[in-house]
Structures are given as structure tokens and as C-alpha cells.
Image (cartoon, rainbow, N blue to C red; front, top):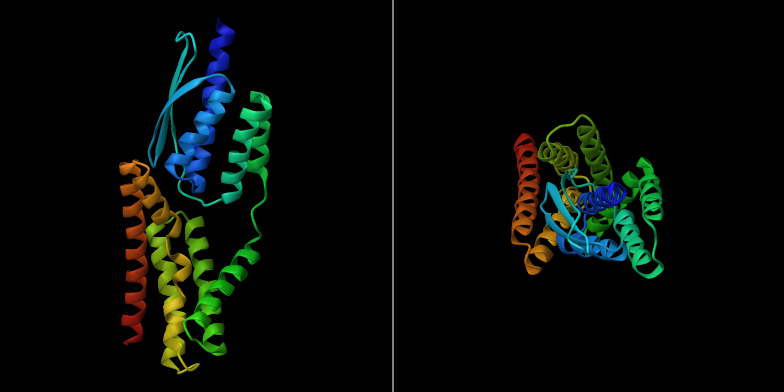
Length: 255
């Protein structure tokens, strides 16, 4: 009996880890719940879960209704990682179709968590190129694109450093928006390029909260109204921080 209870607790802790990783990596509430159910069913358990934006509560019920597991785990702040989301989804299907053991599941989770992130210079360069591309789409010339690239790279760098220093996430967005729009605004002040306003407008697009807003819609469509509203408000707060950063830089440049 003691071994069965211990196994149930181990399974429960693993499922909580899976749920927390999915939510913090950018998965929707519905996808998280479906993935947890798939893994639990593959291991021979029935579960009930309560998933919020900041915590997940899980109860495991065995077939004979005799042994129970109930525990809550806090969810880390959002750090988008779609390699983690797709990896756990693939893992869940392996549990169902190939009857993976709990040891195989934990080994795969450890592997996914150890996967290296992209180097910082790659992130800065690619995000900067995206900002430059948006500037081109909005009608900017090569000089405007260069300004947008530089402003985006420096703005992202500032956000990364502010996050490392553990500033409030919305303040991190504000700092990044202010710095990026201020640098791009200098091109408008000194008349660099034919349409410097395009560089200003596109220099902060890397901060747009796409994941929270998309997940808020999918959550509400799936009936997870509370999580959908929380994510929508989070997205609106980020948008407000972007707007305040832009407004502040424009006031300083006196446009």
C-alpha cells in the first residue's frame, strides 16, 4: 500500500511539473488540461485539475477510488518556449501510444529543460531584423530600416537587462519602449531617412503581447473565462506600458 501511495505522489508531482512548464511556456489552458489528462490516462490514472494563470491544483483518483493525491504548484511567470510546448505534447502522445513509463517521462522532461536557448546575439539580431522588416512593410526606406533595427536591438537589450535586475515586468516593457522609441525618434528629430515616423512606429512592435492576447481569446472560446480575462488584462497592461513609454519619449523630444 505504501508503495502505491508513493507512486501516486510521484506521478502527481510529475504532472504538476508538466502543467507548470506548459503554462509558463505559453500554452493555452485547454491545451494544458488536455495534455495532463492524456499523460495521466496513459499511466492509468484519472485526474481533476484546476488551472489558473499563477497556480495549478491537481487531484489524482485511482480506479478503485482508494488512493488520492491533491497538491498545488505555483506557475512561473510567462517565458515563451514553444520547443517546450511541442516537446511535452509529443511526450504525451508517446505515453499514450508507446506506453512510456514514469522514468521515461521524467528523463524526457529533464532533456527538454536542459535544451539550450538561442544565443543572445541571435535573438537580438533576428528581432532587430523583424523590426527592420516591419519598417519596410510600412513604407520606410533603407535608412529608416537601419534606424528601426538599431532601436529594436537596443530596446530588447534594455528589456533583457531590466528583467535580469528583477524589475516589475511592466516597468521592463516601459523601459524598452521608451529607449527604442527615443532612439528612433532621434531620426525624426534630425531628419534621417524619408519617413522617420515609420521607424518610430515599428521600433516597439517587438513588445506587442501576442501570446497573452491570443491565449486570452482561445481560453475564453474554450470556456476558461477567468484565465482568458486575466491574460487579456495582462496583455492590455503591457500595451499600456508600451504606450506610456512612447508618450514619454515623444514628450522629451518635444514632438
